[in-house]
Picture 1 (tube, rainbow, N blue to C red):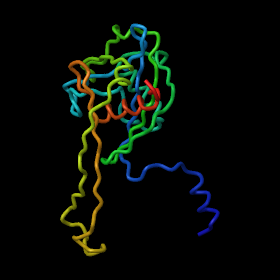
Picture 2: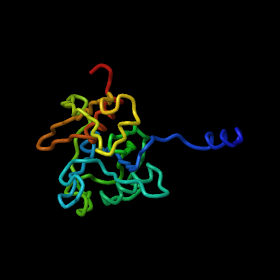
Picture 3: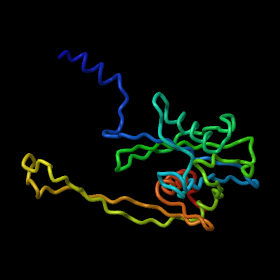
Picture 4: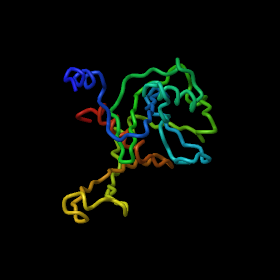
Length: 207
């Protein structure tokens, strides 16, 4: 095979995570409310099959031909029932590669030209929304817990093809899970992790 062909094939592509089957995008929406910046959260509809009744940011799966940013904007429009001109994307935050073959890209944005109390979310997806002042997260660290990750092997795995067979030393890991409590709301999981990541970026070195 020609080396130039290989060089062109490698250099003409964008690197991406291996084995990722599902691509998601979310918006981290800030809105000016009562003269202070607040984050908008959704309480997911209890009729949803996936994570019913949990707290999340607007977002969902990336559709074919979409960029991550386009998906985050589209999902926010659909879930919050607002217009695209109400959304100003500031920039992309760090993205998350999960242990269940998914990647989630997050975008920080402001919501402008609308009163948060007048937002009527899509009831098919969102039970209701609420806001939390950014200052709350700056002043309150989340509780963090850890989940041990173990390798579970199927019975038909070819142990005879690997060093040490059934005694192979599989690596183990830990998954951090964050929790914020705000009034009667529990913000946890990826949403809490993304919140903390955003706050860590903007938090002053000295309070």
